[in-house]
Amino acid sequence: MDKINVAVIGVGNMGQHHARVYSELPNVNLVAVCDMDLERSSKLAKSHDCLAYDDYEKMLKENKIDIVSVVVPTFLHHKVACAVLALGSNVFLEKPIAVSLKEGKEIIATAKKNGKKLMIGHIERFNPAIQRLKELIEEGRIGNIISINIKRAGGLPPQIKNANVVIDLGIHDIDIANFLVSDFPTEVYGFKSKNLIDEQEDSAVILLKYKNSSAFIEVNWVTPVKVRTLDITGTKAFARVDYINQTIVLYENSYMHKPSRSYKDFDEFIAKFSATDEVKVGINKAEPLKCELESFVAAVANDTIPLVTGEEGYKALEVCLKI
Image (cartoon, rainbow, N blue to C red; front, side, top):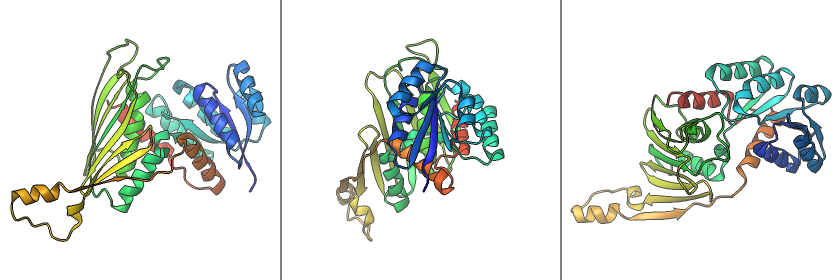
């Protein structure tokens, strides 16, 4: 199979990681990087032996590029993604899809009009712990999902972008909740506040009501320690996920799986119902960004639907904008 030609537009911190990962993939040829700061793109291009540009339209007209990672500030997503799609490349677009639902719709429509694939960079979908949790759900180990509780917290980011904590952090977990229950919320409630900074809300709590379950999400830039955890309660088990260490501890009630659930008295009920099997679930740890970009390369190469579609990215943004 011929190698997939790729390029990266926007080579700040995240864009540099895109370039690094692409350069490591065996079936990919990193053709070029582009940034309005030509000195920055030239320095990165030199380290990866590729071309450097400060004009992405010129880059696309001078080279055959199959995939472009668009890693520019969110307010530029619409302009850059639509231009790249119209020029004939498939687009991997970092989250959120856009600053508004109108712009999100136009990006999706442009991809369809030009027959190109669009994937939104909801990276936590590709955390091996989340992938394994989804497998446990599909295997029936969790049972019917009752509730999901997620905490994503830490200190202030190096610079405050044009997004509050819900758009910057909460959108990750809104998407994860949708992914785990395979549905979109019917009701959305939330509260956000400004605590340490005046520019943007730095703390929020979010409640999502689904048809048969619910999700509670807490996000902030206030907590002095980085926390990335998810607890899920089902009719058969409870699981605790650590995003950072990529671990899952599963707690199954061993007595619940037995054919008979009769009890002589309350003491026996307590003793048997409290009999819990703790299982540390095996996970093949990996870099989520590498898994994410590999999946989009495969979708383009094999002409399959990307694992996070434009429509799913749009839905996550829609929920955020209701809070």
